[in-house]
Each structure stands twice: as structure tokens, then as C-alpha cells.
Length: 408
Ligand SMILES: Cc1cc2nc3c(=O)[nH]c(=O)nc-3n(C[C@H](O)[C@H](O)[C@H](O)COP(=O)(O)OP(=O)(O)OC[C@H]3O[C@@H](n4cnc5c(N)ncnc54)[C@H](O)[C@@H]3O)c2cc1C
Image (cartoon, rainbow, N blue to C red):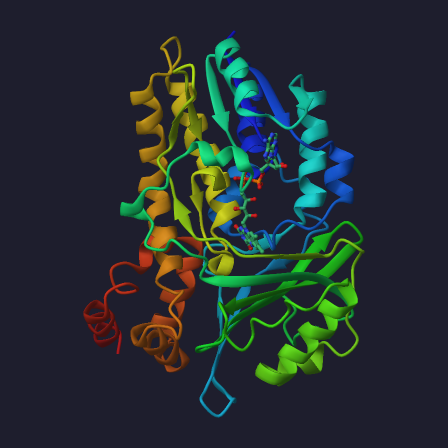
């Protein structure tokens, strides 16, 4: 029986681990926290997953929360004008199928427990490079699925695929109760405040039940990047309210009585969106293959990360199953990543093009045209499910104009 080891029990490691287990592989996952510690720990993500990537979980029977976790059927986009009013304000169906945000603190512990119940081996400890050497030696294939963890430094940044070498947004994530729902509660909201950043807000299922998620994406050093002095959770909640009061007063109205869902309902951070080369050579010369954020790290503004990790798990699984009885050579590993990156590149570029401060004029043009033009609106929103469908017009201003002209 072929032995595969994954370091990291997050979206990519657990999903791929389950897929391999189902096909009879000997699978070990090494991870640094127990299921209980993950459940009781800090929030990690706003984790909106879109229809095609949710489908990869359903294909493995890992969708245990369809009854409880709210579905998001539409996306509402607001763009703030120079006078502070909502110059752009439209809502559009999420096309192919609804999306969902299920707290990873709910999902991962259940997936970890099921993985063990189904015969997988779960080892709890923080793996070092020396440990990775040992796992590489005793396994047919070692995958590094450690997300933003330090082991990801084994992989080198690929400058040809990484236009940024610095963080583009400072992030503040809060899970709250008490937010007044929108008229249509099945709507996720994206607010664009040119020169300031973005604010995303949607329903989710967390450890305490349904909640609302608030994600502030502040342009670095800009006027919304203003929570450095906050230390307690309550101070961050007050700051969130005052930022909304200043930049999105209609959102602030819905948040007068918000309270955190739990003491760990906060995450702050900033990182440069980065694509890395997918193979790491360990000091012994053994090779390991990266998956998920360890090798493709996106800014969360378009929600690509968990989606990419799920799709990577699905594509790597197919590649492994097709490769029965052959060695997992560096060439095979590179091709496996490239098969994934054929899909992922569009999400990386769809995200990066939306990180301008202020947004590039052609992005504003798309959002403004969408206000009046059903086809352009649907085409932009379809990008969240299938980013590839927005090319070349999302990236190239001349193509934007052509696309708009064709649909006018
Ligand atoms: C603020 C924010 C909002 C986000 N919102 C979204 C969103 O709406 N939609 C979306 O698709 N994505 C979103 N993401 C990104 C998404 O959460 C990640 O891309 C996704 O979880 C990555 O999956 P992964 O398997 O690569 O890593 P992870 O899910 O991060 O899992 C990595 C695992 O490895 C473990 N680990 C790390 N180092 C070691 C070690 N040395 N030894 C053993 N174990 C280790 C970690 O504890 C963890 O369990 C967001 C991210 C942030 C920061």
C-alpha cells in the first residue's frame, strides 16, 4: 500500500487526506494542534467557499453542514463615491450555485476526527525540517500543507508569478452576533472604498451557531488602517463600528449592537500575496511538494485561498490516483502543481488586479457599468465562482472597453 504523508491539517491537507484514504492509501497527517485546540482556538479565515470548490468537498462526502450553514445566493457590491455616498450599489446572483462560509474551527476538528475514524493516522506535533526529512524517507510522497506556517519557507517565492513583495492590505477579521440582517439575508456584501480599502460582510456558521463575519481590508497605512492601538477584543469591535461610521455609515447602522461570538473571534494580520515554486529540496536531497497557502497565498479580498486549497486537493488527488505504481518524481510533482496552477492562475490574477489603491480605473468602470448593465454585472460576479471567465477584460483596460461595448 502506498504511504503518503501530509504536514498540516487544514483545508488542503485534510481534504486530500480524506480523498486518499477513501482510495485505500496509507495516509498520515502531521499537524500542530489537536481537534479540540483548533475548535477552541482563534478564528483563522472568513472562509467563503464558492460553488465549484464546495463541490470538491461534496464529491468526498465531507459536506456535513448543509442543513445548518447558511447559503449565500447573491453578492451585493457597493462603491463609495468621492462625497462618501454609495455611488455604486447593486446585487447579483452568484450564478452557478450558492457559496457558504463555515468556520474552519467547526469544519477542521470534525474532519480530523473522521479522518482517524476512517483509518487515517493523525500525529500531533509541530513538524520541523528534520521531521520532514524523516517523513520523506518513510513515505512514497511528502506534501507540505502548512498554510502560512513557517515550514512554508522551504519553498522559494516565484517572482514571475508574484507581482507584490509586500502586503497590500492590513486585515481585521471579526465574527459577531447582533448585526441587523440585510433585507435579503442570503447576500454577501463587498464594499469598495477607493483609496481606503474594502469591507466584506456575510453570514456564516461558527462554533456558537449562525453569526455575521466582518472583514476589513485596509490599504496599508491608509485611513482605515487604524487598529494598531487596539488590544482587547472589545476595543476592536468599537474600532470596527467607528470605521464603518466613518466610511460606510449605512453598514454602521446595522452594527450598533454587535458583540463578538466568542473570546477568540478576532484575527489581525498582513502578508504579501505570493506564489512559490512548488518543490522543496530537503537538506538530504529528498523532495517534497507544497499544496495550498504554503505555495499559493492570495489576499483574501476575493476569497481565493480556501477555494484554491480545496481545488488543489482535488487536482492533486486525481494526479496521485492516475500515477499508480510509479515513483513520485520531481517532474511528476512539478507537473501536478502546474495542472493545478492552470486553474489557480486566474484566481491569483483576478485577485491581484483588484488590489490597486485606488482601484484601477477599468475596475471602477466595470463596477459602475454593472450598475446599469445586467450582462456585465453577472460576468463580474461569475468571476468569484470561475475567475477564468473574466479574462482578458478584468485585467486589460482595452479589453474592458471592448467587453462593455459588446454587451451594451
Ligand atoms: C483574514 C482572512 C480571511 C480569509 N477569507 C477567505 C475566504 O473568505 N475564502 C477563502 O477561500 N479563503 C479565505 N482565506 C484563506 C484561507 O483560509 C486559506 O487559504 C486556507 O485555509 C488555506 O488552506 P491550507 O490547507 O493551505 O492551510 P490551512 O488551512 O491554514 O492549514 C494549515 C495547517 O497546517 C498546520 N501547521 C502549520 N505549520 C505546521 C507545522 N510546522 N507542523 C504541523 N502542522 C502545521 C496549521 O496549524 C494548520 O492546521 C482567508 C484568510 C485570511 C487570513
